[in-house]
Length: 132
Image (tube, rainbow, N blue to C red):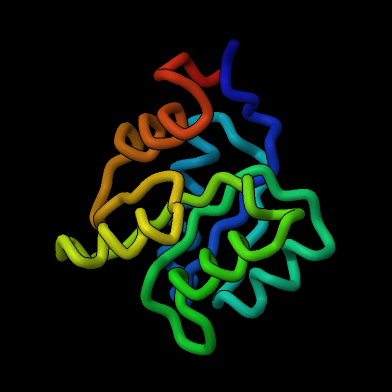
């Protein structure tokens, strides 16, 4: 089994440049179907109207943080199994524990490389099988 590069990914970050970098990395890996949101509230709206297979979300954002979005996702039956990768500059142990307690599927600390993002996606969807 391989990771489906046709899956729909939602990238959530309040900085357009960061969204663009993540989107470029995802494109380089082979993913093509990528939606974007600039905060958790806008991400909620996208989740309600589009089929999303993976959320890659920043922690610190105005309006609704990534942690708050993750908690909202896990409270709703239609989304509670949705893979959710938290991306943040917060490397504090308590932040990692909060994300894991909220049932994040994975956690990446900025800055990160394309290989780290690729590996985290593989880890989320399967036991390190190749992406195709």
